[in-house]
Amino acid sequence: MIYTLDKINEMADGDKDFIVSIVTVFLEEIPQDLKDLEEAVNNRDHEQTYQLAHKIKPNVDILGMEQARILALDIETLGKNQGSFDEINTKFPVLKQDVLQVISELQSDFGI
Image (tube, rainbow, N blue to C red; front, side, top):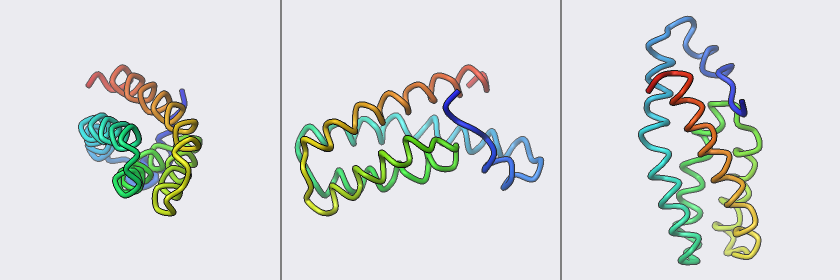
């Protein structure tokens, strides 16, 4: 398991529906965001890469996905600063793998 519910549990204060709603939103939005980020990276579009990594970062952070948060931050910074797509292309596959794994785990753990 590469995610934790610690931050969500702290915010939820025992509200199970709140936890499920956060997980549901993650599962609904992140696959498309990840697909769009991959397209931006493939198109070597710095601005879109920056915007999408910026959007993904808090979503992986709330699930305690520290490696994914760091990767999203790195990709966001590289996009914002017109950085090397060679470097982005080394980081994105790891981010994608982590996010896809968590999507699968969440779907299994929550039955969504």
